[in-house]
Image (cartoon, rainbow, N blue to C red; front, top):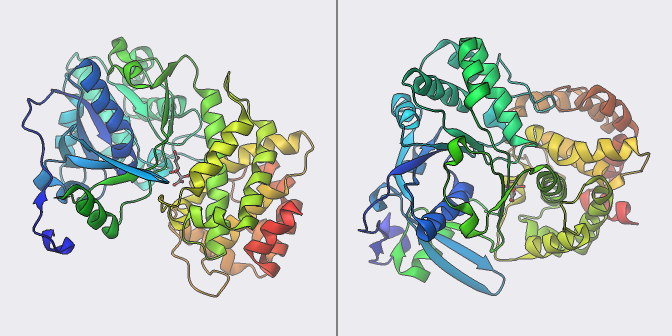
Length: 481
Ligand code: CS2
């Protein structure tokens, strides 16, 4: 690996300072958590101490553990501002486990009495729920397996089996801290955990209902997946080879409901985390304004041949389109106290335009079936109820429909990543006209509630017909005309 960068450089290594005890197990150790939650935890320990070392768990990929093992999972966090860049070593991971290789070790780590928080970034699909209703999907293959077997595969399975061990050992539950972009993520994961627990042992569900805590969070920092050229670049800047740096924007915002089991948590207040009673307004603002526009730009931008979000908004057609989209979304967002949505939108535009952040449209386009409800459909529903026309939001849905058909505007195949990819492709292939495709896709009740689907039929068909005939760029221009 060292040869890759062509320089005889040393490797980044863990510091020799005494290690803190482990207080957190994190499920889903990807770039986002390492660029965000882990950084805050490291800073909170630097500010106020505490045994909050982190054991990271990869639920799938051994590469997350293997590549940075020689550096004991210390890594470089690179902040990329438009005209400035800085690096910092984050040395807060004490171990990394790969769940499919050794689920028992993961359960053991989670059951350890020193662990007081289990946080999650397992993506929307990792909760194994129905995105339209938020209910645990009991016939999901991993859930069906985990309900029968002691050694889990899914995040809900690990949470419940580990919590059962703690109860049996007389240890209080850990706080479950969801850091995924889901609406009311605390209540959602609570319901999933309680439903799962109820199915294996109703008294466990009761114990968790009484003693568990599942604070809601709003998380925000744009963090593209790290690429090989990024690794070479970071090595050139720092002079140390790091196989797993994370590159992200300067902006970050973490809002957490301050509701932890026995109030045990790192000193988040000391490092700028907003600890609040109610996260819902922050979360709605972020999911609808940021993630909603991100998905819209991802589908349209990809179809128009743009590789990244910054390339997409550099095109005046899409910059105007996203402003129109925000104008549609703002009236159906209840801003948190002290927030001005116009200012928030302007800041988003500047964040998207940062050319140093190579956030691929393809990356954001992933898993649309799991993302659409909270990102776009909530805004659509509220606008339709108010009788307002929403051409920008309808075009975003139509663009997703085009994208999941799997062929782009130049006839090239699209590598669609989505748990429903096959089904979406089959539906698309079976219908010939845009109107047929729209009708068939709207009938997927795990994504579109029936009444909304009915209301969307005419305006999304109109958007789709224009998009299919004229392409993404013209369709965006038509929305703002
Ligand atoms: C993005 C998010 O990939 C995606 O779907 O919309 O990861 C987004 O970058 C983050 O939520 C920003 O905080």
